[in-house]
Length: 264
Image (cartoon, rainbow, N blue to C red; front, side, top):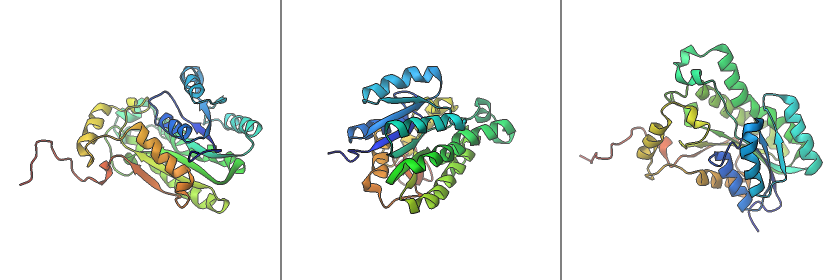
């Protein structure tokens, strides 16, 4: 019997097999969960459907998380097929390329609102209609990054959106705790994904993270998946409103030590 045997999880945000959300899906599948997926547009559908089929998922639905009617349609189908379920994974974020490449002060109003809508408000948008369908002991989990708390080059408006996302986690946790629903976030380290590839200098960031890590390596997709498993299973029953770092310890370091540096 796996940790999630008999549980059902709805996953928003898988883009391809390198997505952090896919690492989470694989961990959940390994531990016995039944999975449902959403996709945005035909191009992503072609990537998501084969992945969903590989883990036996029978529910693969279109969803633009900026449109309440599409979110509602997802939950109507979930209610029809599953009735109640247990876990929501929110792994969606977006900002205009120019708002990541330019200085933050040059962020357009439209770009700011778009990043906040897709990357932060969408957590509220997909959680609200899930509440009446989630079983007691249910869990909502989202993904964030250290750029919410510290200035990261080329992260810009996404860092501001992630800060709003993390605050939303705390407020949602307070709202939903009395219903037995936990809300948490994983702050994952630098991983090469479709989303991160839009950030200038991502390869350098990944290399720098490896040098900074006390463990001497970058965090992997599988490691994030295993941490999500803890937070969404009964093992995490006492945890809510938390931003849980899964970054091989990079966030604790104040300075990166050069590889050839030796103690005085």
